[in-house]
Length: 579
Image (cartoon, rainbow, N blue to C red; front, side):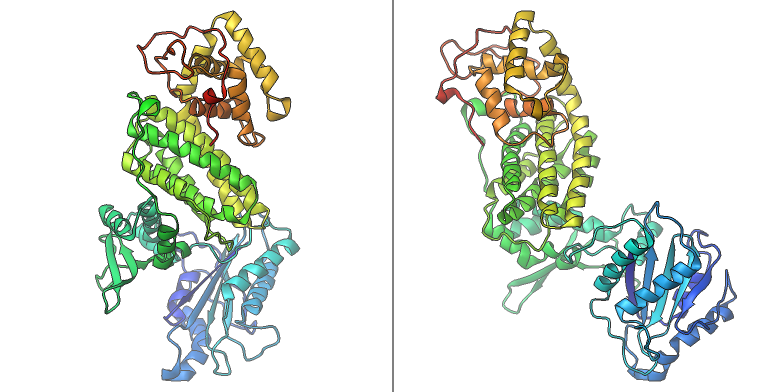
């Protein structure tokens, strides 16, 4: 059950006229009262005449009018109460009882208080009601509405249990403010896909992803085409900021500004400054040598780098320490960076994943001393590297990173669940589903190429690698039943062996990094880990052969096929580095 509360400055007539009218799209049917403050309020009925609406509105407004000029600026309290999709229908008597519980819990009309505010509950659809009230009590005092939204939510959770309705997740006061109904109506009227508040929140988060300092953050905002207004002290120090979408204006033709803290609690300038100062995102140059291969673009290299940082973040989340709260912030920045630089095929799902996961980055758990510079630097590298292609190393490293981020999102869900953060845990799981969809889109081509290479291995080599996989990969980690599902894994081990690694030791290294129980496809997760650890290309159309007598492979003349070699003995210096 979802209660949404709004307040207004007008008298009751516009709201009552809307509730008993046909609606924006003729969606209101059988409009009628189900309850009122005295159970004798006049019911205008479906599509009434203006004088019938005015009669009810005037009775609601009488306490407000009695105050004259002393009446408060905010006069109207409006609460819609809606059941969740799939809930059983409720009759008028049930809705009347629910309305009385809501006005009692919020302080509009406590039970037994005959001098409380006047209110009516209107039903014009099967699944919800609207409660309209005036905020002046009948004894002339103002209504006490402290924490009314929180109280309405708490009462809704009790109603759900008593009526056998779907149990929704309770909030904790850290969620971003949702757009009002007026914002939704305006967006629909002006042809926008979403209210400006949602667009601006996403734009601010993307501008913050990997930003190294405050000036860079503001420059990125302006670079996205937004209007930016800084609030400054007489000394010239910046105290806050507001953003607006060009062309979004009010009735006075003035820009509609949104301050950072009205978009989300963690987007206020003081909170942004703390993040920038505590964990600056460093510019990390591309290394030389084997990791700076000519076949890797900047987007491919940065995604490979980010996968290692994300894997470490997932490990810290699994340790279930409060300091891991900061890892969620860093992972959110990587997602925001990917959402603005990803290939077209995955862009939509990644944007939805970033939107969902931003809820998981906020809770009452603080980890101010935690170091997330690696994650923020990874996000910065992704942004500065620019847009990635959907093919070759760009597409393959995107799949590598997405595979890791799925595990991060699932680790975040477990971390939040352990602390009773129901909304954040649900948001993490929702992000994981979007990431899985994006992963499937990105991984199809490179994984098919690796499977073909695995099937092309000579039979003796394939049998030996199958035996290695069976010996190292335990049944409890989701070992595939059929060897053909190991084609990509076998190809990866063969290429790692040519690069000078011991397949058995390298596979054990990949398995030991962190648990695999939450992975939907253990084979895929291990393939990407192995390729990152052994520094193998992720879309290996033209594999390389190692130089004789060296532990790791060096770039040489490309060959059309892989020629498996005698298993190499892995010295400690040849082992893959732990990340």
